[in-house]
Amino acid sequence: MKPGLGTQLRHLIELLDGAVEQAYVDAGLDYRPRYTPVMRVLAERPSATIGELATLGKITQPAATQTVALMVKRGC
Image (tube, rainbow, N blue to C red; front, side):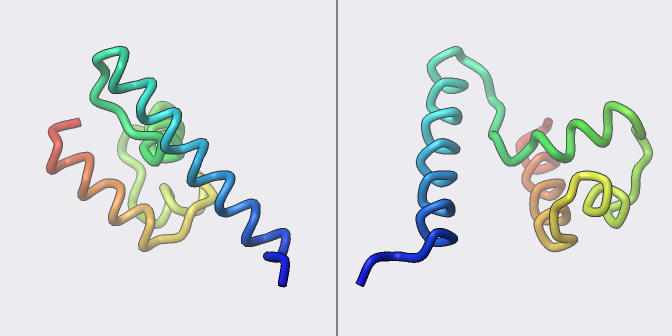
C-alpha cells in the first residue's frame, strides 16, 4: 500500500530538516531548523511566554517547551 500524502510530506520535511541542519554544521553554525519558529517570535517579542511562542510560532505548546529547553541547554 502506498503511504498517504501526510506521511510522504512528513518524510520530506524530515529529509529537508536534516539537510538544512547539516548545512548549518558545515557552515560552523550551532543552529537547528527547529529553532526558527521560536526565534521569529522572539525577534518581535523578546519576552514572549511559552504559550505565545506556540501560538505565534504556529507550533504546539509541547514543541515550544522542548525547543526552548534545548536552546537553553545549548546556550542559544
